[in-house]
Image: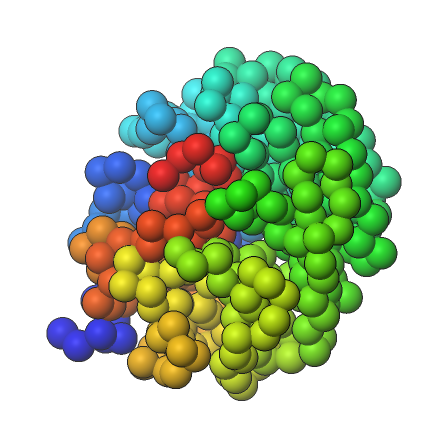
Length: 349
């Protein structure tokens, strides 16, 4: 099969907004608006499905023991055993569309529409909650010191210590739906909805630089092995921005990009567009190929070690697409939530 060819499609009963997580055994986990989280074998057959009481927009995260964590619009965060049985559920005070992040000691962090970031112990009890001034749809990320970064609709990026106290906040002057990415030197990269990408010092929360794109941004940044920041915008373009705040290139699609790019081991960048295509783009910004995936791609791609690219679509299907990349780039932040298990933790490969 040629790169860009579709290996298989897995059909769910409603649209897919969430992004796939991959277990160490290759199992693919993806949520659908049909209120279910699906576990799918690498050959495209269903392993199991887990039913919640709301749409699953949140992307699953997998801990070191194979436990799967996912939020639902029913207001619960679910911990699911590898066999598809429920370990526990934690009830928040609002819908959960944020994707969970997992700390090294097993604490799970997730944002909620009630404006709070919840820290949940591995046994499902609340450790603490940190309240912001707006809904949290952004997904949290965790640095090497255990500090949690999360954006809020109130326009701030918050740095929260592992004990739940505020370290600092950064005023981005516009709602943040983008999840933060962490560079090799600890720099925090996050985009505000107004189209500005910020590079922020982790120590004090001061701005290093900002770059303004042509339109709104919901996409989260990915970072290449050379430090290039890749991010999509509502102006239909994927931006490649150098770490010194100069534009490297833009790649045009035919609709807005809310998908977060994934970078392959060979430096190829994969991103979905609302035009219904998954694009493969080389490091110079030239198109390698595109694959039509039936509907708008809010989902962010993932790349398995065998070269299969997985991405969900608003047509309700998970697509498995052949590529030449053998897994993710060895880079600071190669995809949405950092790694195949979507832990959002800089310490996890």
